[in-house]
Image (cartoon, rainbow over all chains, first blue to last red; front, side, top):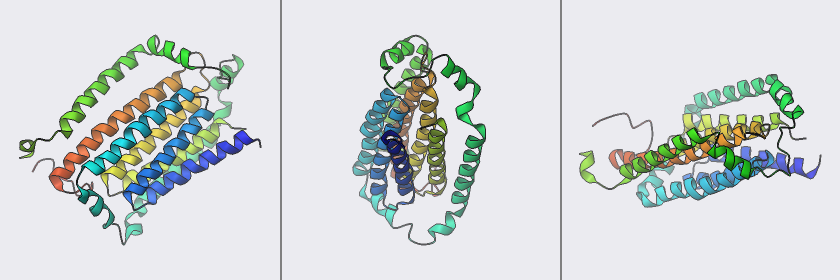
Length: 184
Length: 101
């Protein structure tokens, strides 16, 4: 086992462990900061899948955008949001959560079973892709190719996403504005 | 050797944790974090398979689209959560049960 494989397993473990910490943590702010750790470790895993541009985008959009937005949403909203989160889950938490744990564990078993049965490393199109030298190598620079593809082959989804982003921007600004008479 | 199966197994674990958070959490912001976990598991799978498409980069391109959509969804969801708090004084999804008051 060389050092790269070791780092990969460490990153995978960090993803799982920090996601579990987020899931079981009672303190909301702590779970958000552990969410940071999960996202950074996931960006590292994207680098291992040779998708460095996606990794950088993950850090910029999630850590720079979504998490700061979540933190601001607390701090700008009422302080009671933070308070009434923490008092509630003091007792009987395990009994109420048994169905959710059951569903999640069963889903995990089904997924793991399906992944192992599918034997993805020996699938036909992956073999063909490896034969045709169509696999990204670690030394390749994929960013120019991605830019060209984004502007030619994937132009329609690109434009659709741009329109949807503008709709989301207008919608979020409309929802978050301060106007009292809207709710009466 | 890092194989595709390793990526998919990590994604499966993340997906299960996201499902648990969406079902069990009694706080809309933590439910939102669970949805982000599910989206990230999907993005991890896209990126892992995208390694085998050097010519068109389909996996990585759609991973980018998914990241952008997740960001937009988080912004709208947080705005909705703030509005729900303004009206109901709670963000427990179990207590928000009226469409109109």
